[in-house]
Image (cartoon, rainbow, N blue to C red):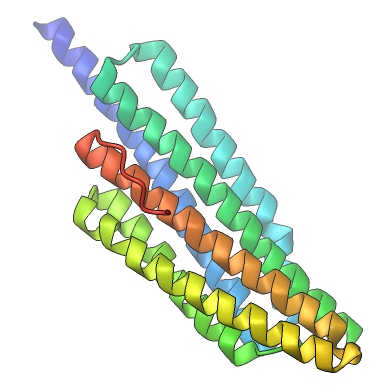
Length: 224
């Protein structure tokens, strides 16, 4: 009996450590995304450069979570329910790492545009899309950490809004570039930023799907 209690206590300690690591990574990714959008709004090459410089830190956090997960499985050999929880944390860490990459891509476009002397087209529209995307990211992380399947399912509607805004921006940018070849670089920057924001929303929706799976053990597609 005492041995079983020690095992349960040890598993809980290691799982809590893993959860804490994921929470820290999630907060860092949210910060990177927020800072990337601030750099876009301010057209701030210095801020953009800092995001690019800090991206390896996010990658290192994911690697730490991979190591913690491997040690947890090796040490405790968890049964299905606990194994599902640990592997879900690992998969969410992968989604967060990719979101960090997209924040870096936005920063790269801002810095490149600033250094070359052009401004991405439709910056107001991009900022509005960015605000919606940031909201989805924040909501998906909060839902996952609280294992809130109801909130996670609601994120699908927000992702549809991102898709609609993306299509409108892409069409507007295409028309502007066709009418004025001098806008090519600015148009390309806007397209790259738009695609990055769309992918952030998609990855955040994937996190919402993982939340539903974690809470219910059921697979539901929210990113159709």
